[in-house]
Image 1 (spheres, one colour):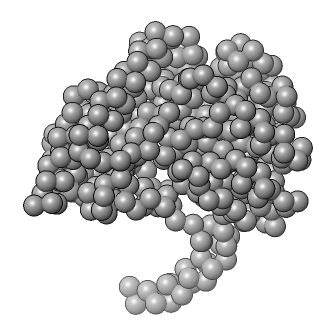
Image 2 (cartoon, rainbow, N blue to C red):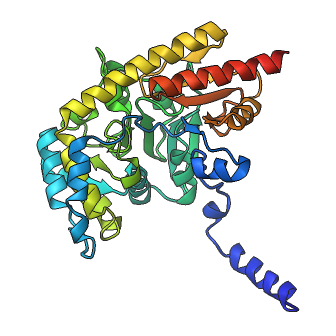
Length: 379
C-alpha cells in the first residue's frame, strides 16, 4: 500500500499513452437493467421500456432452433456463418458474399468505420443520431461532422452539402434512434446521387420492419444502383433476439470482403445463427410484432395527448416525448415507481424521454405512472 502514489503515477503515464480518440470518449450508456434498479431501490415490480426491445419476445421458431443447438455448445461455431449468410442472401435476393455478420449491428457499424475512415478523415451524421456513430468516429481518430437536425430528423440536403473531399462516411439511420423520424426513398436517392462514389453511405435499418409505409425505402433494393451504399440490419428488434446479439450488413462483395478482414473469428455464436435463420422465415411472429407495435403506438400517443405532452412522430417501436421540464428529473421519478424509460439528454434532447412500446398492460402502467409524476410536479 505504501507504493500507491508510485503506482498511480505509472498508471497515469500508461493511460496517457492510450489512443487520444479513445481517451476522449464517454462509454455508451445502455438502458438501465431491471436488476440494477432492484438493487438500488429494492423494488420487485418493475417494467422496462428503455431499450426498444420486442415485448412479445422471440418467436416460437427461433426459440426451438436455438434450443436445438444446446448440445453443440462445446464446439466453435461456423466461422464463416455459411448457412445464415445463405439464408440472408435468399431473403434479400443477393449474393451471399454481399453479407457481413456482426455481433449485433453495432459491431458491423464499427467494421465499416475501421475500414473506411481514420485520422484526418471526416464522418458525417445528423444531430440527435444514434450515439454509436460519433462514438466509433472518435474511437478511430476521425473528425465528426454533425449536421443540425430538421424537425428532429435528418436534413439530407444539408448532409449532402456537408460532404467534402475529406468525407469518407455518411451515417443515416432510417428510422432514426432516438427520435423515430424517417426519410422517404426519393430524398434518400437524391442524397445518394450527390455523394461522391468514393464516400460510403451507411443506411442503418435496425427498425425497418416497423416502418413499412408508402414511399418508405428498403435499402437492400437500392444496393444494385449504389455501390458505395452499405445497409445494416439487426435481429434485436422485431425478431426479439436482442440478448443473442446478431446483426449484419449488406454491401457489394469487395466492400464486404474488406469488412470481413477486420471481423474477429467466431464473432457470431452458433445458437444465435440458428435462431436468426428460423426468425427470417417466421412471418407470423414478424406480423404479430408489427401489429402489436401499431396498437401500442396508438395507445401511447393517445395517452400523451390526454396528458397534454408533445411527442415526435415515430416510424419505429418507441416514442420520444417532451416532458415539459427536465427529462432526467421525470426519469428519476418514474424509476421510483418501478418504470424504466430512457433519458436522451446525451442526444441533445434534455427535456425529452424515450419510451419503448410495450405490451398493452405495460403501456398503461407507464402512462399512469407518468400522470402521477406530472401531478406531483405540478402540485
